[in-house]
Length: 333
Image (cartoon, rainbow, N blue to C red; front, side):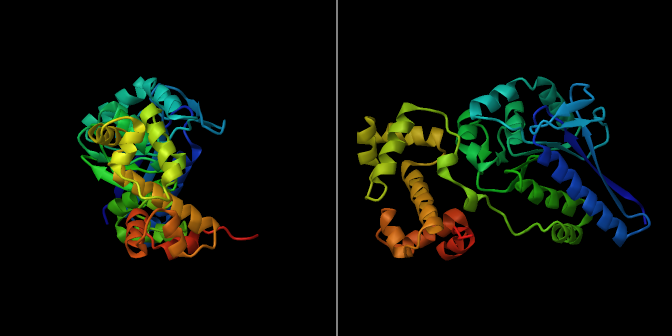
C-alpha cells in the first residue's frame, strides 16, 4: 500500500487559547494511532505542526502557559488552522487582530499557494479581517455574531452552523465546534469510518450540527448603539405582550423603514425575527429554571398559539421544548 500523508499546520498566535492547539493536535494524534492499527504497513500518516508567523521560538497562551519550540512556517501543509484568541470585548479583539499584520500576510500567502485555510472561534474574525472571507459563507462563535456582521458585511455569516466550508476556507464556532471541524478533516483525509472511530474514542457527538441550542442572546457581543439600546430596553419589558414593528419604531423615535435598515445592519435580521429570537431566549430560560407548563411559558413569551411557538422553538434551537428542558434544566445536587 502506498503511504499517504495529511499535515495540519497550526498557527501559534500570542494569547491564543491553549485548547485550540491542544484539542486539534490531540484529535489528529488519536486518528493517526487508529489509522496505524487499521493499516500497520503503509497507509495514512496524520501529522500536525505548530509554528509562528514572526520568527519567534515560543508564544504565551491565554492561560499564561508558554508553547516553545515553534517551527518555521512550513512549505508542505494541507490545511492551516487559525486558533481562537482570548479577549475581554469585541473592541479588545478587533484591536488585537489589527495588530496581527504578520499573521495576515502569512495567511494570504498560504492561501495563494493553494493551502486550505481554517479559522475557529474568534480566529474566524482574523480570516474576515484578511479579506479571505469576502463574498463567502462563514461562521464564528455565536456570541460574536452581531459584531461580526457589523464589521464584515461582505461575508455571509451563518452563525448557527458549527462548521462552514466555502471557497477553500473553513470556519468553525466555539471551542467544541473545533472537534466537529477536526472530525471533518479526518474524514476527508482517512474516510468517514476513521472519523467515526476517532469520535468514539474522544467521546465526541458527531451529530451536533448547530450552535443554536447554546445561544444566549444576553451574552452576545454587540456594537453599542443608542437605537439598539432603546429597542432592547423596550422589548425586554414588553416581550410578554403583542408587539408590532410600528409600535417599536414609535418608541425608538424612528420610521419603520429606518428601523428595518438598522436591524438588518446590526442584527442581520428583521425586527420581527429579532423579537422571535428574544421570545425563544425567554422560553429557554423558563424551561431551564422553572416547572411551568409549556402553555404557561408560551403565554409569558407573548404568544397565544402553543403549536406555532413550538415550531418556532424547534426551528431556532434544533430541539423540541421537551428535549431542551430535559437536557438543560437545572438539577438539584
